[in-house]
Amino acid sequence: MTKRDLVIRISNDTNLVQQKVLEVVQKTFDYISDALADGKKIELRNFGVFEVKVRKPRVGRNPNAPETDVRIPPRAVVKFKAGKEMREAVLKLSPKELRAMKNGRKSNVKVL
Image (cartoon, rainbow, N blue to C red; front, side, top):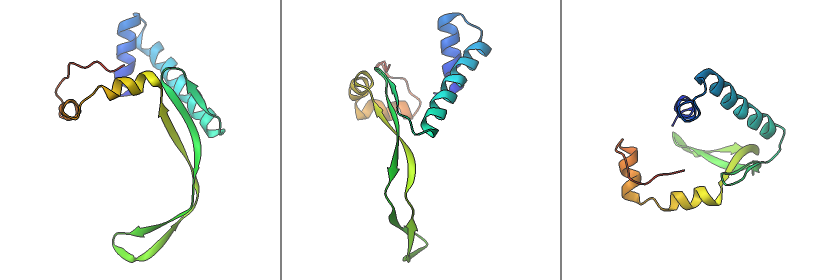
């Protein structure tokens, strides 16, 4: 699902103009991004938690020159932990259903 798909669905469900829905959705994403850039944690009940974590420094390998070690410095990354309701909905999916969804076929399981 893309941002555009999300805007269209919300617009259809709420009978609001797509441009206004797009502004609200984009502003929401902007506020989440700004808070994460400030190192804050975003907790959306029944959805999940976004937070910034620091990855430890590590040694990587160049596949084209495996004998050469590459030092990868520590860096900040965004982690997401799904909320209880989302986790339970996703757990209901079988591997067969997931493959069908990835191949463009519809499934009878409704994900929140």
